[in-house]
Amino acid sequence: MPRLDSKVALITGASEGLGRELALAFAAEGASVVLAARSAAKLEAFAAELKDAGHRALPVVCDVGDSAQVEAAVAATIAAFGRIDVLINNAAVAIPGDITDQTEEDWMRLLNINLLGVFRGIKFALPHMLEQGSGSIINMASIQGDRSWNHWTTYAAAKGAMKAMTRQLAGQYGKSGVRFNCISPGAMDTPMNRERRKREGDAFYESNKRMHALGRMGRPDEVNGAAIFLASDESSFVTGTDLVVDGGLSVLPRE
Ligand SMILES: NC(=O)c1ccc[n+]([C@@H]2O[C@H](COP(=O)([O-])OP(=O)(O)OC[C@H]3O[C@@H](n4cnc5c(N)ncnc54)[C@H](O)[C@@H]3O)[C@@H](O)[C@H]2O)c1
Image (tube, rainbow, N blue to C red; front, side, top):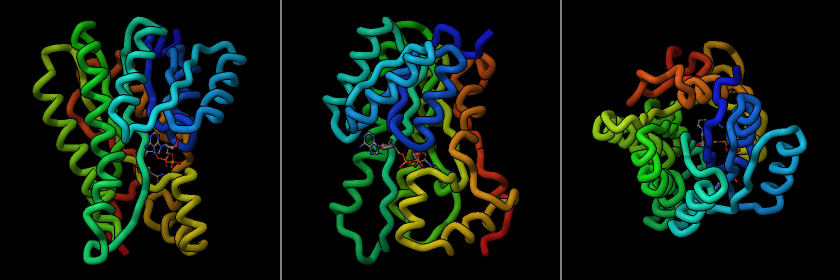
């Protein structure tokens, strides 16, 4: 029996990277997937690919930086499938910068997507989950919320706040049947990091590999197992946790 049979999952940032892999894996486990991201063309092509393979998929253009678009994405989910069982707040941007050079606008630009985007997803999906008496909200955090890297204060601040927010909500809404958890990946070989490789060169990839006890970066599909677990009824007694999927990055000393 598929592990996500009859579940409806809304995944933000589903056109590329981890979000795309999650959508493929969730669909293969029987979920109806709502693909939310900014590019209509990419989403429609991806939804067609999933439908051709016999899955249920709905593309929804949604910039998580815009409240009305997030509200509309949740409404489209309910209109199409009548419920929402899983929300994966996955969309994010990676913008480095030294704190002494950054402006308030730099901070607000990142926080608006990486942190307020999460607030918006939860704000609009949670009422439906409360009405259903069940739901699983999965926030894609990062091991950067716990460890230090030079130049990444804003990104780390958003991920750290996301973890605190997840624990707060898990406590507040536990009795409702809605669960809140995070996943903290290590460095994954996604477009986000391929962009950094273009900017920072191959040395970036080599140092990223060495950071992990497993001696390599993560493949984009290597958070799927954690997310399927947290989305499924197998994790029915798991809330307020941060599932670390970091190839042993956090057990090694910093170089
Ligand atoms: N790649 C890593 O090493 C890594 C490590 C830890 C955590 N993460 C987290 O995992 C998640 C996915 O990362 P990724 O590496 O797949 O990134 P990615 O850049 O490869 O993909 C991000 C996705 O989010 C979308 N997106 C960006 N801004 C958006 C917006 N305003 N509205 C809607 N969609 C938007 C992009 O279009 C894309 O589909 C992010 O939350 C990221 O912070 C990634």
